[in-house]
Image (cartoon, rainbow, N blue to C red; front, top):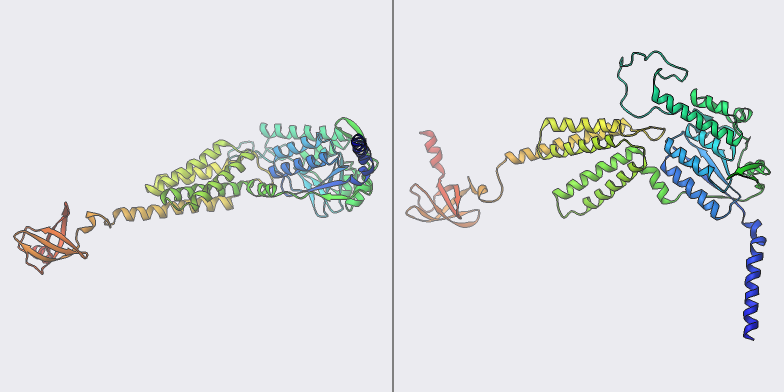
Length: 456
């Protein structure tokens, strides 16, 4: 009897394992959708990576990558392209909603997707690489400033020529891989050309124009795509669409990876920790400062930064901290100069949404200098003022003689009874002032003695 039960359970388990996938495969297949809205950066890379991982684990039919971006960082763009090319799930690039665009880095990403589509009223292009970060050129500093090539840049700019040629090679390789118009892609890179949705369809840059995701899946149905070197026919018609929302960590990354926010977090962290050191036991400034400093450094680590620029900024903050405790003009001005110079060259490359804003950095530097000067002024005033504690604070105080015999006796000063001595005749009840303190013995003199001496 026991053997029969075991056999029955084993048969039921095998039947469930064999038949369940086939009976539920049709109902579980879905089209997942992820929206990249805003500048392409570390947060976008993480969001796409997680979406592709979820799509692979759930064996989704396709992943719809909805784009509405002005561009962004080249490093993040290349990581996203690599993830798309290595994806086991077909990716449909879709520029939407109406009024959206896939400019600069978005154009490269759209070229990399297995199927490319756009909504009416959208555009793409302007894929010219952004100039490398660094100090702005001085007026008249370039003799060949007026001689420009087809890209509008000064001739002889070897670095930008290399960057542009590399971008052209990338977009052409993607066009060849997906069977799209490589000539127009090169034009978008070299001449910053742009296209509307219908024009992009005529130029064979995209596969079709779709008003919404339902039409998108209908038009993509039956197309043959290359996924991981294998041909795959898409079966997307009528699939339910499930949107993947970014998690809290991705939302946090999208905020702190703005270089301006990262710099402000670092400043808050540095000064909060300084306040904790100067006021031990406050606890809150130290905790908040440490968190802000770690977040700022983590965000900068994700960005393509120039560590010399970061070192200059930290050096500038250090100079301003020293200026606070030892007021000098040189350290203050040097600290501001180092901070601003470091902010100028902080990023190796800059893109839409990832540029250091002088509207943020300038006031931050001015506020930092102002706080340093204000604190220094208070410290200098406190240094010059009379001491308020200890024996030094007793000098000049008035006292009343309680008893006196010979050259010594007792006085009442600040409500306390003190031993005292004097080099002049004094009687009980006289008003005196303290001139010195030695071994808890006050040296006093008559209050009118100094004035009388001054008249004589």
